[in-house]
Amino acid sequence: MKIALAQMNPIVGDLPGNARKIIDTAVQTASQGAELVVFPELCVVGYPPMDLLDKEDFIRSVEKTVEQIVSDVPQEIGIIIGAPVRNPSDTGKRLLNAALLCEGGKQVKQIHKRLLPTYDVFDEYRYFEPGQHQGPVEWRGITLGIHICEDMWNNEDEAPYHLYSANPVDELAGKGIDLFINTSASPYSTGKSEVRADLVKEICMEHQKPFVLVNQVGANTELVFDGRSGVWNQKGEQIVMLPGFEDGVAIWDSDTGGDPVHTEFNDLADLHDALVLGVRDYFWKTGAFEKALIGLSGGIDSAVTCAIAVEALGPDRVMGVTMPSRYSSTGSVSDSEELATALGIRLEEIPIQPAVEAFESMLEKVFRGTKAGVAEENIQARSRGLTLMAISNKFNYLLLTTGNKSEMAVGYATLYGDMNGGLAVLADVLKMDVYRLAEHINLRAGRDVVPRSTIEKVPSAELRPDQTDQDSLPPYPVLDVILRLYVEELREADEIVTHTGFPRELVLDILGKVDRNEYKRRQAAPGLRISGKAFGIGRRLPIVMRWHR
Image (cartoon, rainbow, N blue to C red; front, side, top):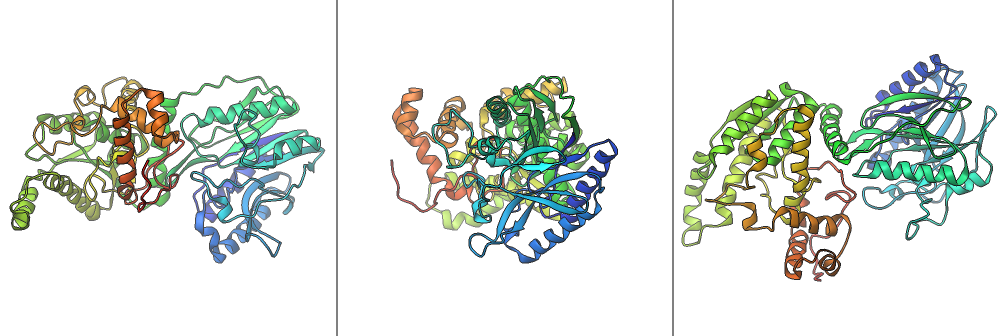
């Protein structure tokens, strides 16, 4: 049997657009001799649809869209599409997450997702009822073990515990299948692609059956999906591989099998490509903004953000603004100019000192008799934020926030200042990884796009004389280790001290800063998720609490 893998980039809620992609792909693959084309999980609505699923009008529109797709695809080809369907029971959640096998103008079989993730960025039990065991599907002389995304993730033999009592892949294999088919919307995070491939390999080797995986690609708000759909033979060797971070189609002939393909994962390249895709799809899918706007400080974060935006959108759709104040170094402007020239973008220089002095004059009476400090420093950051938002409003440009995860973690960012913006590109990238990205960008370009002086200078907010980040923070190589252990690996203070040998006082100070600044992060722009635990929708901690370690 010839099976087409349709690695699709849907837009959440764009039912007509998603339907057209499905139908066109079915027509294309049918003309190439495919008998079955497999699409990703919930491809009709896009993943994650979130509370759109609570709208009755939306569900009715989904049902009509599915009818249209089933009617319009070539009658000779079978398709597996993902869509929410109504729960026929009068108890439980209203919907089921379903894979629909269709041919000849009708639905042949519904397969319901059994394992519903409710952790990190996932909240499927909010909307869906878990499916019941349904067994394999007999279709055109082949027995298919069709299941949906999480249904395969309870098979990790080496997991310290399992979230679910059921193991759908084992149950399907026990019923005597010829082939596994998994439809997924599995988000990207660093290292996830390799873990997913290893899990599929394990399943194939355990059950001696080939495996077809079709994963969503693209970005929807914070989440980025890497795709990397493929086919593995019964030995666990990958024989078909679709590329990461771009849509595509491949046709596999199960009768002839295929030769093993070489798979290689590069975490740094994937991180870069995920961020580029996240920015590109945010602009394309919202369709709301003319250009990207970035405040350029001459520092590493704004430079890397700008380079990513240019790769995502092109230089004509990116504008930079440098905003010197009395404490800005010469390099703040000159490095921004060098970056803008290298990228070919428009750069405007707007000094903010007149605005700072105006605010200082306005506040002089209220502030009289107090010592100058953070409040006065932040007037500069907020003057820059106000300037950028004025340009954003005037010309319908999307302001990209440039802060990194290390800064956001410990509150080294100014509300209504440098936190202004609609999309936080580096919000899930630790500071040392920003430096790695800068080197990667230059290596890919074969030249210094990010100026060498920007990479080598000491990080500074430039809000007071001779200020450096390390006046308030430990060196970033130290800070990032603590943050990775605490935020991403969920380690606590004693374990971090034992693991790193860092002073307990230092570790407790950093963890306290992370906890206290939840209120800032709650007001931040949505950030592109690239780690296993990002601030935002994947990490939910109370702002008001009195838990002290």
